[in-house]
Image (cartoon, rainbow, N blue to C red; front, top):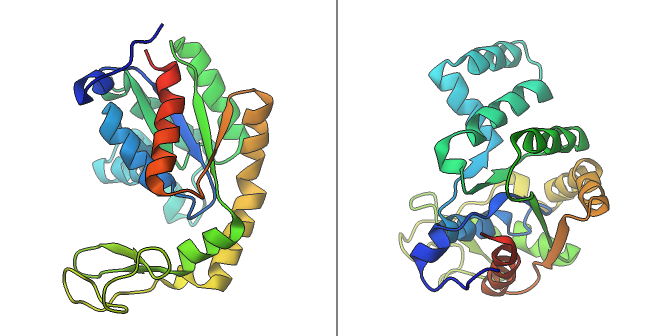
Length: 234
């Protein structure tokens, strides 16, 4: 039986196991991942960062990946999985970790299941899907603006600057990403539906998927997320 944690140190000593956050672009996965990292002191592992790290360091996996990319091809599942396997075997992942951008396909999810089973992981994989109403997703994404100086992110609908299109801190004119246009976002959401939603069905059938509404304020979503993770922590 778990004893409620009473301090930051208590949470940072807990084992929460591997965590996957699912959700459409704009659902708040990045925001919630940061909260999990801070509370439990576990790393967030991005496959994009892993790829760049291996190429930069010139590891054997990095050399193979660079050769593939230089030829204009996509890095294979096998290479990506090998990088993930190496990274989660490091000591800082002993109590758990968040996988960012992995798995992207059912094939990668099946590999991960086999990998974790072979390692005899004490804690089961946690898969949490953050669901958000489609119209709210559009507002979150099309309303996003960024300060080119300090990097502060605003939203013209939910978190606007005090002066229109101007950073509160730097006074710089905020920038708008081309891929945040309504047309580009529509394309991204369609890609998500076709490529990523099958993962939800896969994990739902395995009875490991928990869905949390991301329509509420970020703090409320965080509290619900923590509640779900604390139930299975050791």
